[in-house]
Amino acid sequence: MSKTRVFIYGSCVSRDTFEHFDPEQFELVEYVARQSVLSAYTKPVEAMAPPTLESRFQQRMVTGDFSSSLRSLLSTHGSATDLVLVDLTDERLGAYLLPDGSMVTRSVELIESGAEQYLPQGSQHIAFGTQQHFEYWTTAMNYIGERFQHYMPQATVVLLDIAWAEWSESGAQTPDSFGVRAADANSIFRPYVQVAAQALGAHVVSLDPAEVMSGPHHPWGDAPFHYAEKVYLEIVRRLTGTEGRVVWGPGAASASASSASSPVTGPSARLAERAPAVAASSPQASDRLDRLPEGRGPNFLIAGAKRSGTAWIEKQLSYHPDVFVTSGGAASNFFNDQKRLADPKERDAYLGAFDAGAGKYRRGERSVLYFWEGLGNYRSPRRAPTASNIAEMLDPNAPLLLSLRDPVSRTVSAYWTAVANGQLDLSQQSIFRAPASLGIIDLSHYRRHYEAWSTAIGASRLHVSLYDDIVGDPQAVVARLLQALGLAESPEFWAKATLKRRVNHKPWVAAMKKSGQVSAQEIAILLELFEDDIAFMEDTLSRRLDAWRDLKKLVAINTK
Image (spheres, rainbow, N blue to C red):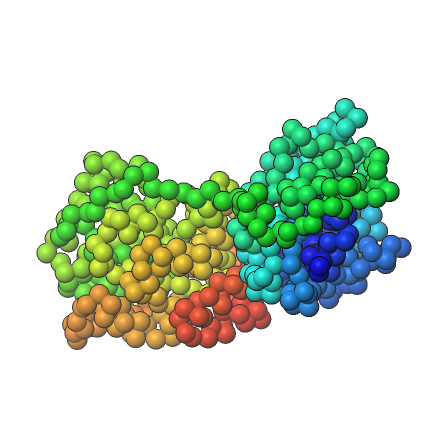
């Protein structure tokens, strides 16, 4: 009988679990450790060489981290893998962002070798558990998940969600790991596990934390994630339905009788039965919402994204005699607020904001915060199911106008606008440390937002304009918008339109850019962060967006 071929991406948690498999039935094809998802996602490190280490294994792992080797290894072993074991323990120390946009894992080897002290000047530690880390890691994990599914579609992927042990078998509390207690680590890991499970399409194996203990005699020493042998044996039982083999405890000389006599029937069927994947929590509308009355309220929306030309679009459309547009007061962000949606008085106030446009063929609202869908978990800065709310309440034929800008420049512009508005303290906060609630980075993840809107509302109702075109050929943009709204052009309209005039422009922002607060390094990492979103919009629009990827140009326009 052929052996089950196992690919490990994780730490000693997965590797030690594998050691307890029956070697007659499982074989290891590859082991990738000390390589965070962020490192695997970004380009290889070229600014420095990996440290030289005595251990050949450690040297291979750290060298792989510097070269971002995971993706090539997935391609190499894709057709020869039956089971993938993943755990997130090696994420615990975060990663370093280097000035050229590459990333290196903050591993124990990097620290103990002293190489951490010789990272290029300007390198930034992205600490595990911070909002900055979680947002970037989520994008990276989604990409890595797609790579696994692309190269290993036939393999069963298992995510080992084993809590850090708070207590040892000896009865003593487990030691901290680099100052982090087990209980705190378990809380921090929770949203990461949810994202990883969804991105990988993984079966998740979890144990009751009360039953998880560390092993004081573990071969690698005492740590919250160096478990007692009975923990590994229970993981194996849940994975395969058979008893694992004892490796370092009593009876370690041979595999247990049960594993020797009971053939493994293959992990896939048992995994589906025993370890259902963790479902990320997602926001839900409380009750079915009533549609707004026909003939009152808006019949089109200008829905974002922020700092991408929506105010300019509102201004141009307002010159048309058959259009009324509002963007403030009682109409402001109505579809984002579940309480307002369910309150009859709030609904009436919202509808009343459009009474001034009674008799107009098109009545619209502009909001720069509608085109923003959350991550689907409690860490998300965005909770309202806006797309679903619009689909339920708005005229089902209402066009939705979206204006998008290259995501790097949109993010930087939103950052400086927040500074100018007093929402951020320039002396204390970088673009990556801005509060997530402002959406400075998250609003630029166009793929997530567009997919949610397309699913809930329908792609045929989404009309995308690009900021690039507003700058390059504003009249053509307005003509397309009028066509989407079913409005006729006229000489009188074009005579009023102020196509070349900038709207909502803040001239003092140019001086702020020269402060160096947003560095070329941060521009590079933003571009990496939004690569998937750019590729998605190219596919959606059937158009190349080379300027959105031109790092040299992006650095020039956003830092000078």
